[in-house]
Length: 84
Image 1 (cartoon, helix red, strand yellow):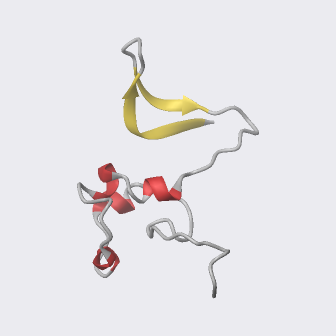
Image 2 (cartoon, helix red, strand yellow):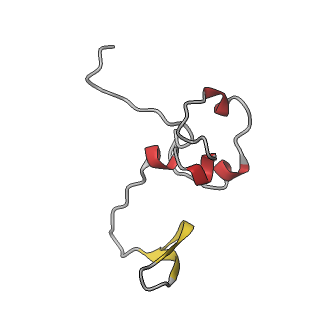
């Protein structure tokens, strides 16, 4: 399969890459934390905690990113050793 990149990258040789070939049976892991703090998606203040982001319609840059997962547009973490 060919995986399209959200943002083009430039290799050391100067070639612009827009997609990466992924061989069959390759496991991929999406960093939800990284995706949900990406300034290209969320804007210059992506690292700031702003719960009101989710109280209004999400920006087009977020919906267009097609981030996978049920909680894909909400940066949360869980610590299973934390007291309940």
